[in-house]
Length: 159
Image: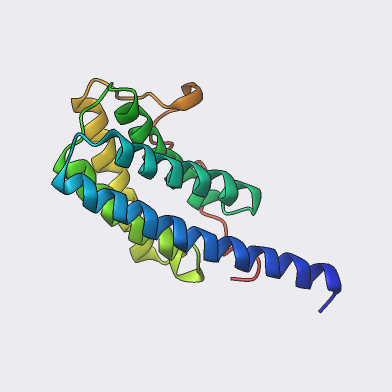
């Protein structure tokens, strides 16, 4: 293996480790929100985890992880800004999405079952956004639930 390949693989491994830690932190925030739904600190905590995961995923070429995290980040941005109210449905969807995000850190994330699970969660989030009067909105004016225009790429390098 070339030295640059080793460095890249090491960085991607570090990203995966940090991503798992972020998802554990997000899950803890969600569990806190179940007991105290109005806790803005926990909403911000979940938002930060998703924001960091999205950005780092983009930097390392995890395009589907970036897209999926962006959708969730948008929901938590609306919650932070008081433009939507937290609900048990949002908490449950995000907890389910956490498992999908974890899968996207590996080759398993592109299995047909995982793709179906993400599509289902994405459709359910779209309905939640629509019910809250936020349908079709996302940060930067992009659609909240982008529709892939091409097949999902293969697994990230080193997966």
